[in-house]
Image (cartoon, rainbow, N blue to C red):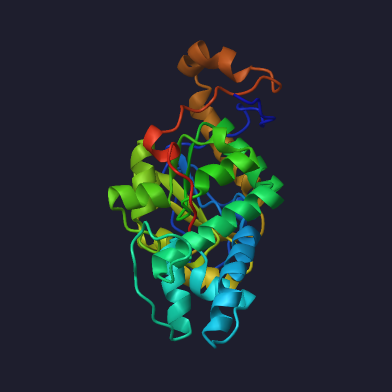
Length: 321
């Protein structure tokens, strides 16, 4: 496993104290958010951990620009991605975009080839375009997101990716962060197990279950409208909105309780949660058994997370949007 430069595990952690829900009409300072009750973090992928939205946008444009022209419909524009596609399972994105243009085509079958003019055929054609674009352009994770991810792992929190994308494993691998995650609940897992996609909260709830945590001890981190709705619809400890273009007001109205431009804005809150936990952790009994652990050198990497669930990682690679 790759060694990561993570913050000293003795400096940050979450505690088992309940985390209060935040006023949806206010914008609390991310540095002041109470994270003591958060023991698990459920991250969306596209737009939260990796800037793959641009890869998806290029792929959708390559699909729909000629298709809409052939049907005499209004041309595909960037705003269509955010209005009809972003955050949805791939075939739902096809249906939504076609509906916006009043175009009706057969549903077809999941196995339809990319040349078929069906909902599934177009979705599979887009998937080919995505894979080719990912191979050509690659993808790098957001540095601030990696810093925050490594900090919460070092604090003892558990982490999962929850993505509508059926290509989540390939994106995580391309970004070099696949080994951070114990659980990946993606579009393939949802389809196989009959889990409702976003904006239903079911995928996030399933990830919390796989982590062995109650939803109230988990934070949802999302940037897409459908993902924020999913987080707000469930009984989660916190819903964090990352503003990558949706807008703070919209994220707040959708149900985000804390809004950031970059995830490292939450690092002071993680450190505060650990500091609040120290009196209990540093009592005589804790010191007797834990002094060696908390004195570990900052250069020593933390223990690696448990390997991911096989069903959540070893799947064919597709995508959603």
